[in-house]
Length: 108
Length: 116
Image 1 (spheres, each protein chain N blue to C red):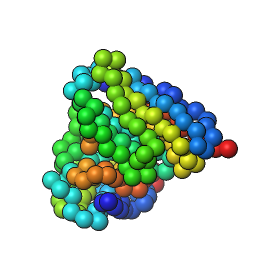
Image 2: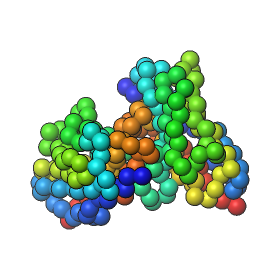
Image 3: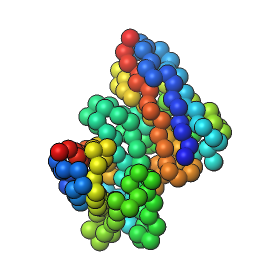
Image 4: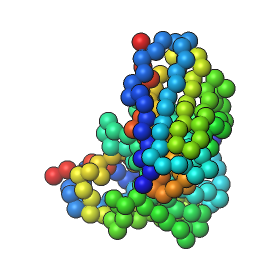
C-alpha cells in the first residue's frame, strides 16, 4: 500500500498569504495519479485537482497542483476566507487508493 | 447538477449488518465507476470499495474484504453497500462517490455507528 504523508499538519496563515501544502508518497505514484480535496466542517470533500496538476471545474487558477514521482504540492497563491479548510491528497495509481492524513489551513 | 443522497446508516451492535444506499442524479450513472469512501469521526478519509459500470469488477480495501459487498442498479441510478459483521472500527460517515479513482462526493453521507 502506498502511504501518503502530508505536511505540515496545520498551517496558520492570514488571508492574502500563500499556502504551500506537501504530500509525499512512500513509493512512486504511477502516472502522477494524485488528487487533492478540500473539506469544510460538516461537508463532503470536494475534488480540487486530479492528475497532480489538472484543476476540476470551477476551481480558480490561484489554486494549483504540481509534482511528480513521490513529491507533490498544492499551492494556494493568495488565500481567501473560503480557503480555510482541511486539505487531503490521495493517490489512485495503485489499489488500495489511499489518502494522506490531511493538512488544516487555519486563519492566523 | 450532480447529486447523491446516501441513506441506510444507523446505530448497530458489533457483528450486525446494514445496507447503505445512494441515489444518484444529474449525470449518466451507468457510464461511471462508483465508489464508497468513509470517514471516521474526527479522522481522515478512507476508500472502501469501488465498482465498474456494469458491476463485473469490484474492489475492496483489505479491512472490509469478505464483510462488505458493493453493488449497483443502473436502472434505478443507485449504488449500494451491504455491510456485515460490523466492527467498532467501521464507525464512520460513508460517502457515495462518482468515479473509481478520483472521488466526486456530492452528498452528506450516512453515519454508521457500531457500538454495544
